[in-house]
Image (cartoon, rainbow, N blue to C red; front, top):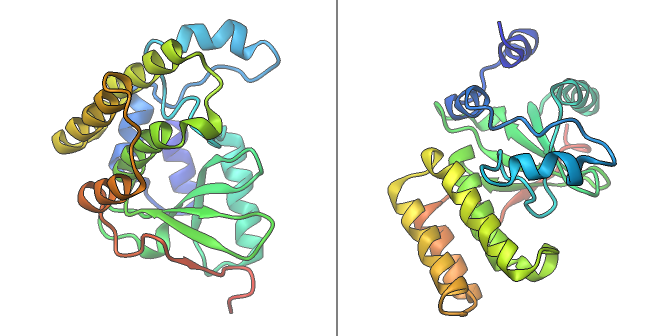
Length: 216
């Protein structure tokens, strides 16, 4: 029994199949965190990056921390079944939201730690990955600290390692965005960004939020 199966058994739920596939493909392996991670570990990962490596405000949680966060969230309100998998630099959580699971579609939500709010992000993990890769280019001025040539290479390497978890249309769309940005030197407009998300990662709850701490 692997660690995902142990967590599923302990908390009586099932991860979506794509998450199991990411685990089997070692896409959830980031090396040991520490002061030398960027110098010693990152060079070993950058050519075939694990899940959303170096994405803006995204750091995958260790499996030990995932269990601690599950326990903590259930102490706040047991009605909301959040399964965290990543955290922002500010301490907010990216979670699977099991309350609204529809088959293998488990919504991804963003749970704020310092205010009573949860934002919907995507209807499933596949769409969340797609949106995150688009966001990386659209929001590059807000988070990118890499030189332009390294940023371009990092984006392409990330697409290469993530393509098997996306649809053909999503892959082609990301390639279009990369070509527009890196070849034509044209920035994606807000209208283009919104049209892309609505077409290739449509979700009726996009832009919506709800309260979870004060909800009874």
